[in-house]
Length: 335
Image (cartoon, rainbow, N blue to C red; front, side, top):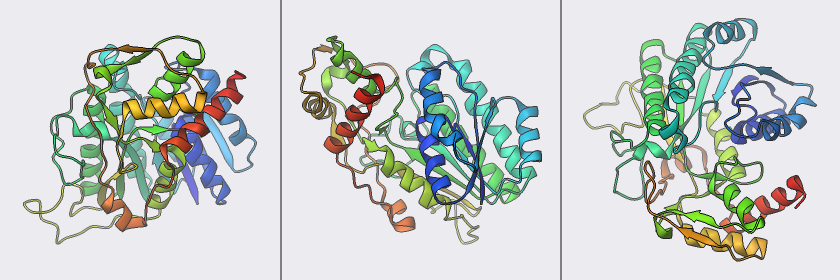
């Protein structure tokens, strides 16, 4: 099978590409290698992939319509795993236009490529952020997601709506995955675990928002990638019996599905920090701060539908996952 993986130099995209290659598939990876965070880290993720005979990397911006059109025309791509786009909730408060370019314009370019070339299955990254002001726990795909509280979340909600329109109009099978706080080796420097580790090892204080009264459904990278790989094999089909008045919004009469992909077990932020302190053998200095705009108090994934679809069941404990990250961090930065 020949796959297009967007965001191939990213945290999840590089790992997904690695697993696909190990399974014997061919992967075309694209990424614009922007400087939102360290380009050197992105290149380091790509380095082992570039040594694989069945991997080809193209530096390409999703918002470049002509380049995306040319890519689909030249490559006999069968399936697309779309993990590219501008990440980060807080950055969307500072630079909203980056999200419009990448997550909206870039995404429609991918959808058009899938339409024009009859792609078998488009799997794309959504986010737990779409649940916004929802209070009900755990977050279920049957819940409404009409009140996002950041532009990042709004673009992810938009990606689901855009996917549905293409599934409905053109019969393109699409599956959206709402990721819940992914962490682990090779993680992004703008994520809490990376920032905390860097600060603690430098003897600096860490910023703890809402005075530590937050919880997140932390999900280890290997568990996430296993879910992505499993779900891309489950191609949605049209369901003429589905009824918008009674059916879940995670399905449709079109070949369209949306799933949560998370650990299904939220962890208090202070417990997460204690796991990191234990792994490092250092007690963190803490700046206890107010809640930040765009953040939510709790994320908690109901993953029952994903389990029923593909048997998805995360296996990595927070302590083991944090230990793996710390081991990678110390080795990568020689500290």
